[in-house]
Amino acid sequence: MKKLFIIANWKSNKTIEEAEQWFHDFAEKLKSDSSNIENKEIIVCPSFILFEHARYCSNNLKLPIRFGAQNISPFDKGAYTGEVNGEQIKEFAQYVIIGHSERRKNFSETNEMLKQKVLMAKKYNLMPIFCIQNQDSPVPQEIDVIAYEPPTAIGTGNPDTPENAQRVAKIVKERTGVANVLYGGSVTSSNVKTFTNMPDIDGLLVGGASLDSLEFLAIIKNA
Ligand code: PEP
Image (cartoon, rainbow, N blue to C red; front, side, top):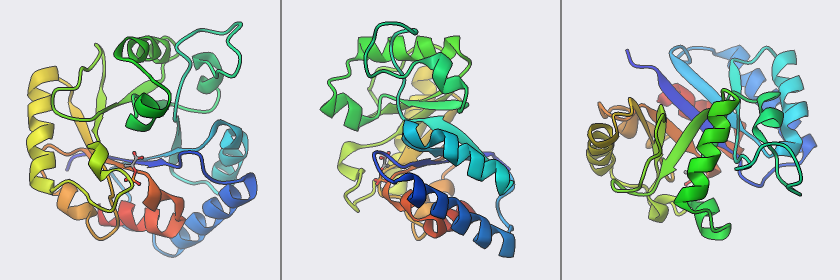
């Protein structure tokens, strides 16, 4: 049975209080039924300001959750106002999302900059979840996990078809040699299984639907 990565990308959402509620609701529901979570790497990617309290909640509630950052500075520590560097992220997270289409579009992240971000992640032993928009998107060296996310499917309620996501995942694996390809774009608890049934889809990157802890748990269980 393949191991699935199930990743919650909270984007720029939630106050500390809302995050705390999310973890409590998730834990309550999981306590009443903890079936179907084995063989799944559950990763939550909150905003940086939420990390400390999110980790506190997760540890306290003994949740089987790991953390990821949504971004990383392309620079090491130093005079880079507003940036959060790899050494700082490493204190809270094991993963980092790099190359999300919202960052490429809204923050002008270039392929060159993304390569630098991957180098920084690697330097601090953070595993990059590298996002690509189509089968031809460039992928830097030494990536272990790719997320295929067609921009037309992100936040629109219009997911790619599982058949096309499978086709792209297979091509990307052959082209890059990367072993794990995830799908992202309007995944819900109702359509998740149609993606994870596909032989070359190794998990999911979930945005909007991950903001509701019960829906996210249902995605994990149905995957
Ligand atoms: C995402 O932001 O990576 C994403 C897949 O969002 P959504 O699930 O809301 O489409």
